[in-house]
Image (cartoon, rainbow, N blue to C red; front, side, top):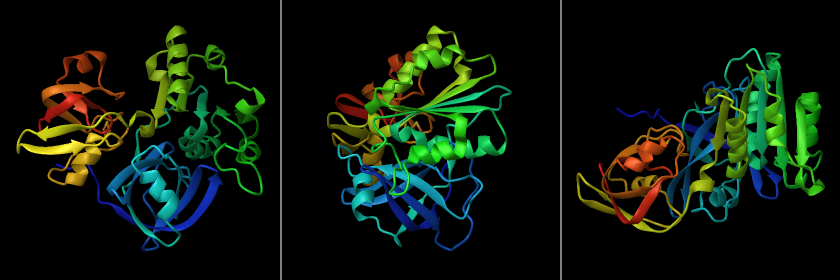
Amino acid sequence: MSLQSPNITVRVVAIEQASPLIKRFTLQAADGGQLPAFSGGSHIIVQIPAASGLLHNAYSLLSSPFQLQQYQIAVRREDASRGGSAFMHAHVAEGDILQISPPNNLFPLHATSGRQLLIAGGIGITPFMAQMEELQSSDAAFELHYAFRSREQAAFVDEQAAFVDELAARYGAHCHFYDAAQGELCNVAGLLQHMAEPDHVYVCGPQSLIQAVQQAGAEQGIPSARLHWEQFAASTSGGVAFTVVLARSGREIPVAAEQTILQAIEMDGAVAVDCLCREGVCGTCEVGIVEGEAEHRDQYLSEEEKQAQNSLLICVSRARGSRLVLDL
Ligand code: FES
């Protein structure tokens, strides 16, 4: 049985250059109706008709969960990627029709009587934008700690007002900004030191920031059930080219250096594989290994499972060697 719900046809109704590298796309249902409800932290999968074939990229929804006439996503141009984000930047125009998946939330807020501590780095601010709408509307206690390289590089700067100023105006004392160009650094260990028993911490951004939070959490004995993170697939993609073999048919599929196994299988079209997050966190794309070894890059399997080499998550993990035979 497929886990994937039918796609939604949407129209691109607005595109803004949010920063030199980031565009914000506003999407509405092509039939003019209301889009499916979602909660803060949800993402959608956008089908991108790139020159290299149909790509599927995951993007967090940053628009308000209380406004279902439209969705908004932010797309950072990744020149080193296989072309999904570059295609979105160069070729998708207002009025275009796209296919998207229904929203799915793998990075939800957890109910607590304590504080919600949100730590964002760069484009990692996106899932928190919808979450802050929810937190603000329910009068919850929360703090945003947002680190970026410079105000000009921070997502969503526009001609009228810097995005960080918009955030400050909207969420006031909830916001704390760290502008690296001004020498301001986010002291993650210091933040976690002041966590009380019911508080939860959420981090989204580059791997280095996530690791800093994980390390500080471990050193301070914070239970993993109160630490939550979301990482972007772009930081785990790419490597050396290899070949996957589908054991049930013997079909051989080349996987290019900047392609994931999942992308290669989707482009080949011979078999369908369920996937929800495409970022190595949900576990739905787990596939058995018949022969060969995986270079695991996911956040789902335990260290023991990774060492056992019985399966891998094909949305992010790759082959260790030139050939990998999969139970497909
Ligand atoms: S699709 Fe979620 S782990 Fe691969």
